Image (tube, rainbow, N blue to C red; front, side):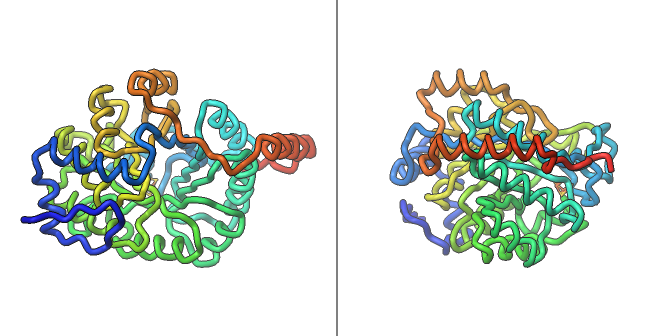
Amino acid sequence: MALTISTTPRFDWTEAEVKALFDLPFMDLLFQAQTVHRANFAPNQVQVSTLLSIKTGACPEDCKYCPQSGHYNTELEKEKLLEVQKVLEEAAKAKEKGASRFCMGAAWKHPSERDFPYVLEMIKGVKNLGLESCVTLGTLTDAQAKQLADVGLDYYNHNLDTSPEFYDSIITTRSYQDRLDTLSRVRDSGIKLCCGGIMGMGEEEKDRIGLLRQLSQMTPHPESVPINMLVKVKGTPLENVDDLDEFDFIRTIAVARILMPKSHVRLSAGRQEMSEQTQALCFMAGANSIFYGEKLLTTGNPEADQDRMLFAKLGINPEQRHDVSDEAVLESIAAQAKAQADNKMFYDANA
Ligand code: SF4
């Protein structure tokens, strides 16, 4: 079939067109993806985010890939919500190491009234450090989405995970529609979307096509699209699922780049298991965002220094933010130190 590959966003990709992209010879697909990428982004820049788990484990959802689900015994140590000040210290460290965005993840079905105000404080503090903020907290009400927007949250992460058809084999405690509803609430409140999925959960190519089509039909496209490779964790129902061929993973990144030309496509979980060469091919395929740091919520992530060395080998630079002055950041650090001295920012996580 004749394919029209556009460097500007389209929202009407058909299943046959997306399948035709997956069927392209590997090098042709990478060439097309790289061409789309260069028309929209600086070619050798990668956005760097750091992710911190602010509340770990005992989640009531049953996502089959997740060590944090309370349904499986993964020997993960559970933690209550972290103190605000501790989170801000981690954010300051992440900024020092070159992160431009700080993402905070809580293993909740939805945020409780008790915890939500502390999360709002975390977001304000992260923004005051001159970092972009992102949270993932589960489903939201309209009022919560508005409150997040009011404190200036930049991104909300809520993944679709897979195709609508395969979804029920992975999660039964909430529906695909629940996810779509939260995503539209977040979009309506003016917050940017971070939304993607996980490959290698035993899905077929048609499911990867289905997921990418869903994402490409969102208007506008999610600004950030994490493409994860399953990290198989002992004790989860997917611990023994067959590996996905890495070429199929790279193809998925390339097709995501072509379908969503202006989105940051994030090479996300699973990077630790990938060689430097595979990661380089993912960048060639149009990935231009990574998580940096030692832990990706609860599974390992390549050490920051290793990432720095890989960037140097490939001539890649971390994307910089230019909209916050150093003076503003210094002022905010001083204000946070004062608040700390006044003991205003502590939350008793053991209460
Ligand atoms: S992926 Fe999120 S919602 Fe699902 S079990 Fe893990 S923490 Fe809970």
